Length: 186
Image (cartoon, rainbow, N blue to C red; front, side, top):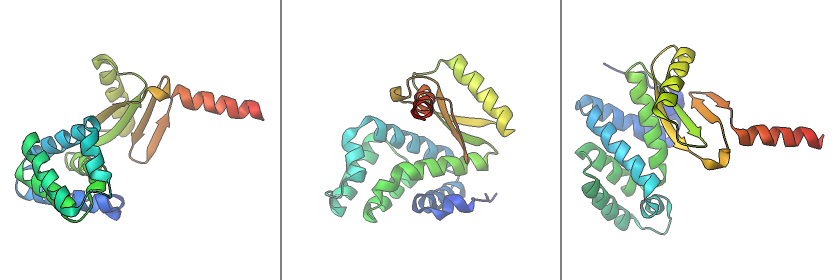
């Protein structure tokens, strides 16, 4: 089954890499393995300052980046397709695109499954019941199942910011306070 990958995703460099990885994963019936490996990489980017620096530092040479990504692949136990993908990014000096490529892959995979993706940023971690209620509300808005990528940003002070496709709903306390401050300045 071919997936219509929207032009918006393919228009970006990260989107083109993600689309190529998706096509290979689907062709080789490795979608679940690749998605699992990309989830590990996403966590590593968030949790490891050293790995995040490796992906963005212009001081890291091509050969060092290739060796480091192979080491990361081995330590995280990534599947062969994702390992090759990471090596290709390193070889082409495109590791800075990794986070965006993971997000694009997730969007493409959700489209493939007939789902929607939403990125939710909250000031505090949400309980399972809150996440379930949020998913139900987003499903009613989208008209289909929604995968929710939860992130926490204490600088929001309270509330949520939800991005789903081209929609953004900003119900954060920070934005409301900034709007009030601007209105009071006149």
